[in-house]
Image 1 (tube, helix red, strand yellow):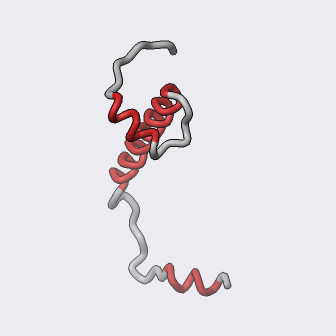
Image 2 (cartoon, rainbow, N blue to C red):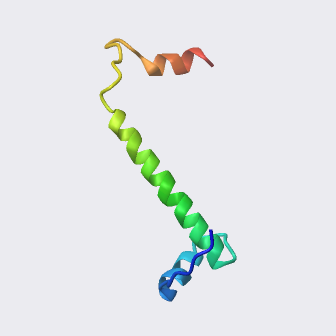
Length: 67
């Protein structure tokens, strides 16, 4: 989708220091991807306390048995 936006030049230059993108389009695309991923991860936290774990479940024991 093609669109025109006004970007803060100082913010763009600061973002380029952390991005591998070469163009502003690459930079905006990366920012949108990271924004969406961040919010997807945040939604996973809503699942907290929806799974019951056995009281005697020992995850450390399972790690040593596989070795």
